[in-house]
Amino acid sequence: MTKQHCSSRFVFLVAIFLLLVSAKTMEAQEPQPLREIKLPGHPFGVVVSADQQWVFVSLSGGQGGSQGIAVLQNKPGQIAFLRLIPMPRSPSGLALTHNGDMLIAAADDYVVFFDTQRLETGGSDAAFQWVRRGAKAGCVYVNITADDKTLFVSDEFVETISVIDLDRIRSFGRDSAKNLKRIDDHTNGSSVAVIGRIPVGHSPVALTFSRDERWLFTTSEVAAAEWNWPRTLQREGSKKSEARKVPEGAVVIIDVAKAKVDPQHSVVARVPAGGSPVRAALAPDGTRLFVTARNSDAVLVFDTVDLGRLGDRSMPTKIPVGKSPVPVIVVDGGKFALVGNSNRYGANADSSSTLTVLATSRIGTNLDPVVGHIPCGAFPRNFCLASDGRTLFLANYRSDSLQIIDTSRLSELFQK
Figure: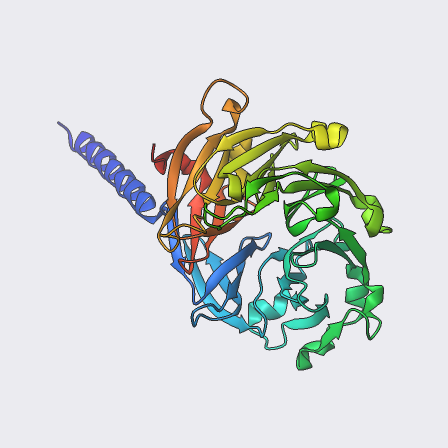
């Protein structure tokens, strides 16, 4: 063998070796499909910036934990807790404006507005506006129209959805942060920002827009007394020996355009939705609405065309899942729905739980839609899917943790 042949063979072997090392290095650097980060309090809501560099989580204090907004920085392969912005009230649901300039939190009696740049840099005056929704309003969830002009707030304890003009909020400026000034919605002109309230049933939570933003779907855990719905369900969390019954909850359909000018008369339909419906998620193509019925241990799947056309005559597909399901989301281009089983009222409610995985193509067929389960922390409460469409964040309330799931690798996580 000539020297030239030996040299060529040596170069070839070195190249193969380097390729193998490179592949192993890349494999080692690729994050696991399921990761978990501990937090200093009970996480409720989670949102991710459009560039995915920042993650904001609402924390309630319970049992000595911290209370406020947790700020995390997301870098390739690594996510780190940076700081906590303390709050005197427990925040719950969160929403980011689509232009990224504001983080909005529901917090008991208040809706709180944060400057996202100040959150990212650690500015002490990040919260620049507090709008009070009334004593014991129970503000729990928020969502924003695509034009960033209108905010909807679930007032859990007063059976309404508040409608707020965000342009008016912006007009107040951002200087009040220095004093964390709380503005009642009937003083200092802020009543102009609160357009009004939409009457719904008991304990409204979800705020999910249709794809064309014509409708807003919200949930009420129990029908309002004036609807005169039959009392068919045992009250959630009560003992079986207790005879008291409650009606089903509802999906309430709201005309978004009308809600901006006449909230009081913007409800177009109320659809029975099992026991304690709490969260709702829309399929990517907008054709199905997934609703968790916590007191029915089930997910209800509605045809959105039927919801708009048939209203309270809509008949959903009911899919049994785990105990007391709360969060739900549709992932992987609509192929799967994930449902968090909270076991909120179980004896082992503080133990780790599971996510039920549904194959959406099986819904409405003779095949079982439940294709597996994924382990998660105690009391999974809210999902947030990042803009890449594959990185999913889950707030595990009783585990004080944030879980990160790579939805493109779900098959690696399934437990049959």
